[in-house]
Length: 211
Image 1 (cartoon, rainbow, N blue to C red):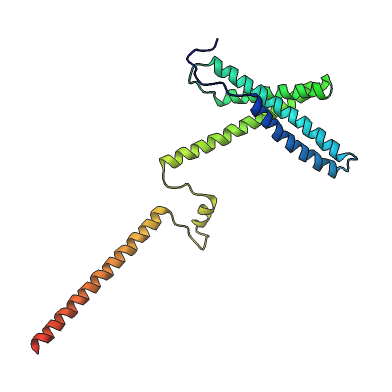
Image 2 (cartoon, rainbow, N blue to C red; image 1 turned 45 degrees about the vertical axis):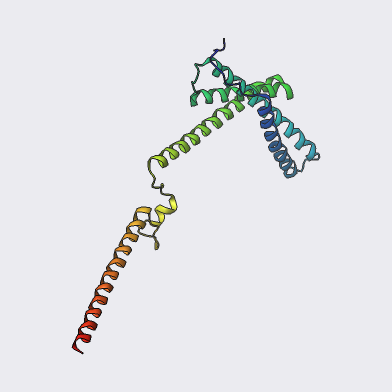
């Protein structure tokens, strides 16, 4: 039973699934065309179209199943609860297995359902896991930037700061220290110049007094 305190509308399923299917279908069509040309297939265009249709069906089914499972889990969870990365990996793996098995049954034969489910289930698991790792690293980088205004050194920065590099890239702190030193040197030169001016003024007055 859905909690009555939920006021946010449910996420759409059909339109996003069609968009994912269109993207995977386009990639499949282009890939099929390239493979057909490289293999010198007699009907390369037909092969490309069929490959695009297969990948469209696979992408659409995968995203529709995944969105449905995510919505079911979200509706059964307490308000405000977020899905953990492990749940997303399991859902993506199950969605890939269902999509691969369904595509194997519809487009080929029932014995092909099990290999298709295994292969695409592993693809779903691996893809979601890789996305979770990349997202966690990106989030950690954002947190580090917020906590430390000093930018993180890149590989180029570390190479330039090594003893073997003929040039050196300064950090913000080092650049600020250099500017402070230059400012102090300028202030010292100004003070010396003022003293020389005062000395010349005194000499001029003394010369004028003697006359």
